Length: 277
Image 1 (cartoon, one colour):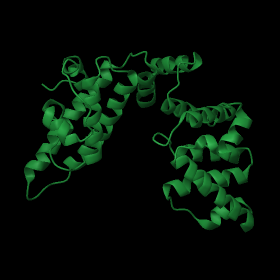
Image 2 (cartoon, rainbow, N blue to C red):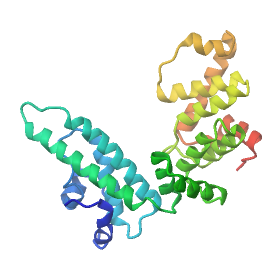
Image 3 (tube, rainbow, N blue to C red):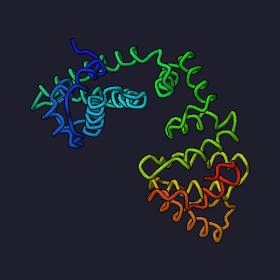
């Protein structure tokens, strides 16, 4: 019977290993990390993330809550993707469909076992997982107690807290987003944070800031938008729109390059939330 991958961590941790990022190299040298996964190229990104994180777990004698949280998320993503892939019938190679179905069953079991193993964890990452996925009241109590005690410093969890307080406590939400941005870098920055901040400024009746942040998100994500709708935020002021578009492009370039600390957005949020530094 296939056992949750986490159960193998203690044994795997005894093996000496380096840190390759190429999944084929990892699988060739560590076949046990990939044996339960499907073989073809479907779900390539989800499978790759899962394999690399499994390797990190193998290489870590005492994995952090964050690392196990990542394993849960990568398992979820892989499981959802391979479920869809298993529903695609391969006419020329039906064995591939069977292989995906096998992988879906095994990943479902692995995910369930890891969820059960981490159910009562006191780690903030794992508590957040169970609160957000299953509305686990006890896990929520652990998560918010950790927040109250100042134990949450991870950018991802801080961003989740900021989103949670967006409507119920806008001032706190803005302060948390300021903290998130101050702690972020070009690798972990999420453009969606800008949309959340734009919502806060819209509720404060500050359409210029709302436009600026929304347009920065559009520049960074290449999202589709309606020009007339955006211009309506500025009451048709095209001269102002040109200035804000320039500012949006400048902010986008700074954020993409990891230079938030040099941005006008940092100056604004520091002034409003006392998060200088």
